[in-house]
View 1: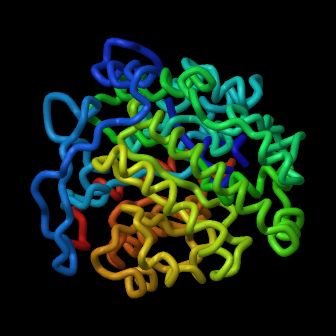
View 2: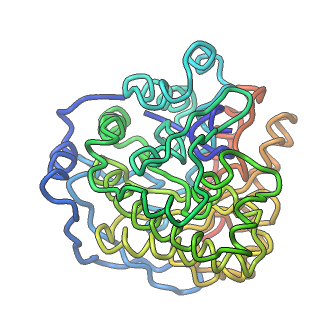
Length: 409
């Protein structure tokens, strides 16, 4: 659940707070200029399979005083000296220092109090120096700004009391007009993280996909069968499509806000994609994800968008033409299989089985080797790091990734 971290109840992450950092000017400009200026890309770099990927210039929030961090460069399609690495649910209850907060403070107090969220985000960064630092938050964080309140109950996960049941409920939702006013802590978290990590890592923003947020909003929480949402899908699809459309528009604004606040890369989490058949995935998830990506890219063409799909094995064919810069794989599909379907020029992220972290150092290193040898571009776990994972095992994974040059070029 989101309780264990912040990236999507299957995944999550990091944050801290200061206004002297250069990107703060962009965040403050949000009040008067909601749409970021699109700048043309410059240059290109050859990639696997001969494809030429555009290199884009950085904006106000680009790294200062040197080369951009590794993860950002690789996510833009540039060659890196090795595979960058970060983890889903990188900040979580597997860390003793994290539990000092989670054992005494409710989730939303931790994730919506900027200095606490920053401290939690920075714990794994200081312990392991990953290539990505994701803000400690939740995939559901933007929902209250739309009129959908939620809480995260320890041991149970997200709970939404005012569920969406009718078209009237959808019509009553607020648009995402002023995220800087409704969600001010997000700007504080991201701008502070940019200052704290400087050029040592890439700051990652994130949110759930329209489908995943819609399913939570209809179900009222996690449901094994997604029964209420699928009943709506099969009986009153117009309501579900209206909800998805509203959420897609809101997420463009929310991710725009994250980028202007300091996020260098953003990730969409489709945590509930496993509830969908390949055909349903196209109609009820991917079409709306594409709307979000198009809106973000119109405003921030230089910012990579990553798309994590839980249960992606049967959906690879649908993802072939997805416009996301990076496709995140769960552990249920091999990198080799995904590479065969998606092509050599597709950037892939994943997908070590997180349970390997309960194994020996030899097993952990072998799993990392396999992912990189099969052609992964960004090393990650295929699902969130779970509570009870030995902290030293996470250190072994990061140390091993950093120990050799990238194999797949």
